[in-house]
Length: 323
Image (tube, rainbow, N blue to C red; front, top):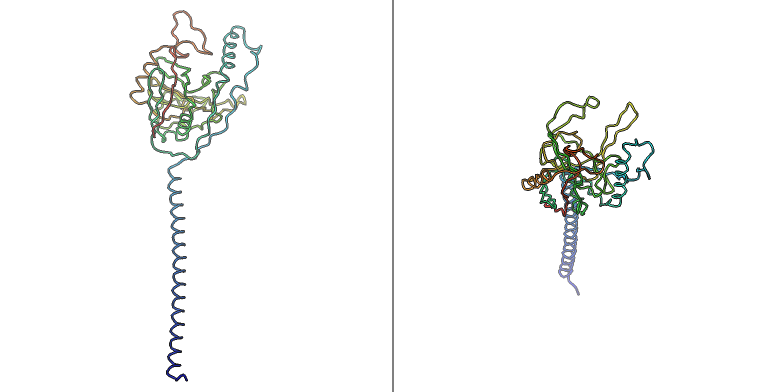
């Protein structure tokens, strides 16, 4: 028969077992709460870190718009219009024939990332048939254009493309390269494009030269120093009096390499400078001479050719990028 003492001991043991079970349950709840809190804290930290990194990354980038480009050859007539004056027909026909012969040379390239870095430099080397032209690109000068040109270089867009135009005079000199069709800078056609256009980025750190255009005071000529690399575009101001609208954002990737200090309209985005080795290559191009190119009238006997195409072919054999 169970004594009172035994019953008390049994009850005491049950109480201790129940209390221990409750303590274990309480500890489990605390662990679960602590774990959940830890996960929440980690999640908050992770989210905060992500948005902090995102804000930091956004602060060092710029938003670019690369618009779809039109086929520059679609507007060409099938034959020479009758309105072309008789004394200009031979030259105009030669130019139209040239356009038709190079239309098939158009190339396409993927659109670049539209959120590139806005600062920092990148090395880009144009290996040409007359020597290398190493260039230091500076994103701060024109981040969207630097990004677009880098994308074209990495896609092979510039490979085996000629420098198709050159102009040298007392007050400047430049060569125009990088257009597979060789039409950038010629009348009627804005030049080849990769299927998209680079946006306008007006240079802000070039010295002003001469007097502003009285019809457009914002068009103040500036000096592009020797060795500057800029992106060609066919932008026009238009003429409101004649109801003509201007054009903008027409750059297709063709590049100006300035052989001398040259005063021009400030509409060409500066993307970098030619390194010392490249300046020697530019000198070779300058000294190589000029012959009339498509759209250039034949010179008179004894007259010096100041614009046309390089007498010796200058071809981009390859382009390499060094981040």
